[in-house]
Length: 265
Image (cartoon, rainbow, N blue to C red; front, top):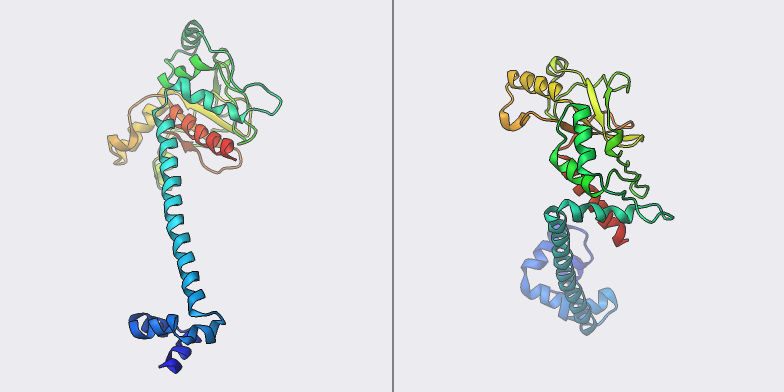
């Protein structure tokens, strides 16, 4: 039997190891008998101590992993449940080293209303909540995220002049090439980010409405295309495609998660 165990311990064939594990008496001999000493140079007592140490480490890892997961869930809930007045200051850890803050003084309600009148639209509620906390924000170098313009600087811009007219407004829906060509091209856009290789902008309502009409004609459901309204887009000049965000709030939550990672390092 010792010869059999010795052959199995010296073998690299998985089937032999499985046979050893299923044969309890032989497995016990492999651990408790003199075979351990012969093969490894360690006594059975030391082997048992090694096994116990490994067991403790594995149990500790499980507990540590559970603790880490619990902390992550707590941090995620803190971000998702946070009002904008709490969410925006979380980004301050992303400031330039020599700057006191990346935040700016809040915009007044009058300034926001004046911008809406000038633009001929009602700005999305979550974006207005942001402006009432910080009227724009500085560039965030540690994560290479763009800053945001103050509300007084917002203006409609022509997508062609910005080099964005090659994009069709698919609202984030998967389309085949023929469907994509039938969708409207990007027209006027409201860029809310500062000049940067990464940009955020709102697509004007008329273009969104036309895109919804075409997508529904192609068989997309209401749940897929969503409701008419300004749609916010993220784009970087090194990326081939647009990223259609669910909301400005969702983008801010993503920044807050990155801020948490930075502060943890």
